[in-house]
Length: 202
Picture 1 (tube, one colour):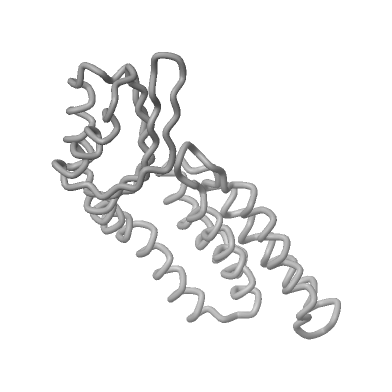
Picture 2 (cartoon, rainbow, N blue to C red):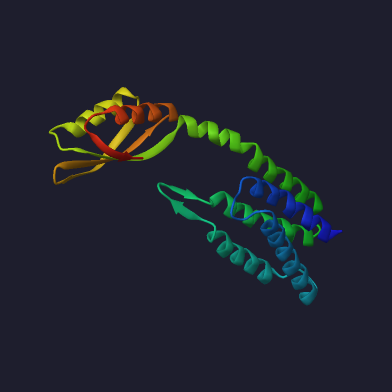
């Protein structure tokens, strides 16, 4: 009964991660939930009661496992949600071992709602609030960087210049820029058409 519940809970959470092609997917979440369950059950058998030392070590070990799926890509940090999901899956396995079925059922439902439904809300927020670091390389011309900043203003973007560098006949400017997805797209179209821009990234 408990093992079946472990597989069901870990599998439901793992399916969502697998569907989104995350690094910790279906099998991983089942194994994490199962491992936490077994450690908790064995510790209870050995001590004939719950053992807080085993539970705390499970939390520590899962923390190291979760850290392994977090990585930095360009200007964003990825894998934090997957790491948190690993942590929650371990907690659910421990809850099953403790026979806290109502709590586990409720928590599993909350986790699935957050993973499936909150993603749409997150995408909506991302459309209206995006931060990018722009790096623009241009043929050197006096006051050219201020021209790019006037273009930021024209597109409704807020910015902060963090660096400017002259290299040979080129000038390189770097800005932290905040605004909507639509305004960022408008600005990049303007950069593509600008005759002085040799290359840019954001």
